[in-house]
Amino acid sequence: MRALRHRDFALFWTAAAISNGGGWMQMVAVPALLYDMTGSSTWLGISSMATLLPAVFLTLHAGVLADRMSRRTILLVTQTVQMLCAFGLWGFYLADAIRPGLIVAIGLVGGIATGFQTSAWQSFVPLLVPKEELLDAVKLNSVQFTLARAIGPGLAGAVVTTMGTGAAILINALTYFLVIGALIVSNPRQSIVPSNGAKVSEVLRDGGRFVWRSRPLRLAVFLAFLTSLCGQALQHVAPAIADRIYGRPSTDNAGLLVALGLGALVSSVMSVVIGDKMKRSTRVLVALVLFAGSTALIPVTSNYNVGLIAYFIGGLAHLQSAVALNTLIQGTVPDHLRGRTMSFYVLGILAGIPLGAFTLGRLGDIFTMRVAVYVDAAVFVVLIVLLLARGWLSDLDVTKIDDVTDTPTTTGDPR
Image (cartoon, rainbow, N blue to C red; front, side):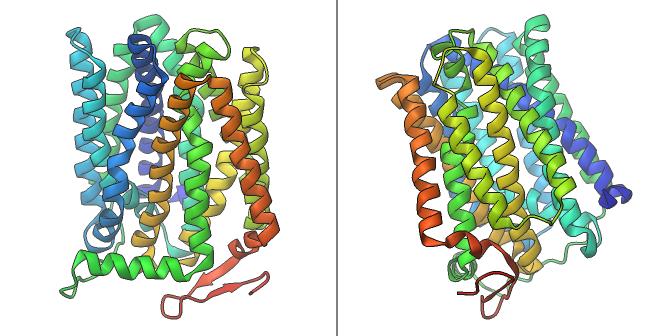
């Protein structure tokens, strides 16, 4: 918690936690509204793709921008765009003009902003604290996302029940003012990397080669993609799971996402207590086993309480995986390459979630949601067997990745 002693980080951390909580409120309310309007889990996948897929095409370029220009400026612009999207969605809802296509279109604009934002956000946080407290700041950043995930869906359920969907969207829109204010008063210590006349495509190729030549970074991007494809995607089809597997209203996706958030919150506390005592390879293996077990548990029964337990375990898994992979990049990659490297990692996440949500939704409409989730769990099992058989997990236990030779220094098997 040492990083919270620094004013800029404490202000940004607090504002981000509240704003992300608002984002989770909207994430509960709007998909449930969309599912009730269409009765289709495929529409949930389409909405997820519209929101996140633009980021797949923009994230790599955004990683270069995050190294070349002020990350604070990038965040100010993208947060403003996302705020306007939320206010726009609220306005259409009040006017009773909301339609499935409109929800997707507004999500698309917000997704474009996300594409420019995510790498800048992840690489902005370390700039608010001294270098010796960088990893502490990274872990606390994961904790604030976790707090938002735990609190936001529960508040969404209460707000939607008492005040309606529009109120949840409005609250989310208003919380953006907090982050924008925190960004305005902050003084990050970023040093801008000069372009030296190099084209963005050339810089991307250099960043891509750096990631590709490093086994730990390749594996981190691969795992980010797979855990998002088969793990995080489940939160985007939660309204359909609540309805079709548990026979509950679509708005009971709030309960599932609260359980997910509470699991992540417990997992974050465990991470703080454990600290660096557990190897990244062990942490990731535990996370993958938990992912496989939780996913397989979801369709076993029609008992909603079992679903809550399954999503709770999924939250435990996600946070452990995210901490291990995030600290790998933030703690081993040189600062002048961190933005680009983080963009490849984020690319894996942003590509996996919408593809996974669309695939689950489509399989759920063609077959049944139970079959779709069982297939999802099977992928995790295959992944675990493959990683153990090839011994790749030990590559995650690196201490430094050199930016010249791209050779990792590790405390494990150097292979």
